[in-house]
Amino acid sequence: MTRQLPWRLADAPDAPFPPAETALRQPDGLLAVGGDLHPLRLLNAYAGGIFPWFSEGEPILWWSPDPRMVFRTDGVHLSSRFRRQLRGSTWEVTADTAFSQVMRACASAPRPGQDGTWISPAMVDAYSQLHDLGFAHSFEVWDRQTLVGGIYGVAIGAMFFGESMFSGASGGSKVALAALARTLHGWGWPLIDAQVENPHLLRMGAEHLPRAPFLQQVRSAVQAPGREGAWTQLVGRVPAADFAGE
Image 1 (cartoon, rainbow, N blue to C red):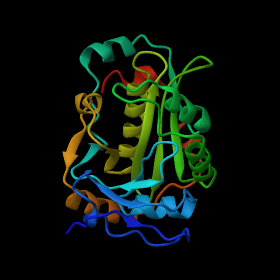
Image 2: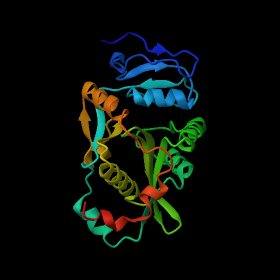
Image 3: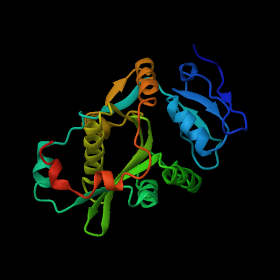
């Protein structure tokens, strides 16, 4: 079932979202408009398979596209050539040590076919609040003291919703994604939500998942025991060369 116009959200941060299954087909996945980026609203959105995506100056738009782009946590692919390069790398990976820095780097990263970024200062503030509450996380890739790659997203229960990643040096985002996926797979988490199709993600093993089974898996995973709070100590400091065999 779909509607002709997006749902207008009520002002209260705990106001319910319409079912993701009722999102518009054109534009694909547009579900609701309005509201704010209050942590409670964001957590309710992600738990329902919904995410915000809008440009600065626009009203807040909420989406649940069909199909969804996802990674199986054991399905991230690094090319043989890149893995050979990693064997001699001195890079290291951490988690939750530079969350805002990763977000700002993602905001300033050039995106082919895009003019500007959706990661506005308001988005940085909102997700930094989620990070402080233990629900938003980043993986960082370091060349000594220089941040050369990273990824961030939202974790609820045993589900990770990826938001964006960047490379400050060639391959930095690949290492960050591989580190995230291996960590989550080790915890028994099944999926990383990658939201919408991107050729780079497809080359790394992302796949399409129709909305119905995606929502079914999300609604189950978010009820599972999670790992709230900082992941810094859980992940430690991992040599990027450790991913050369993946």
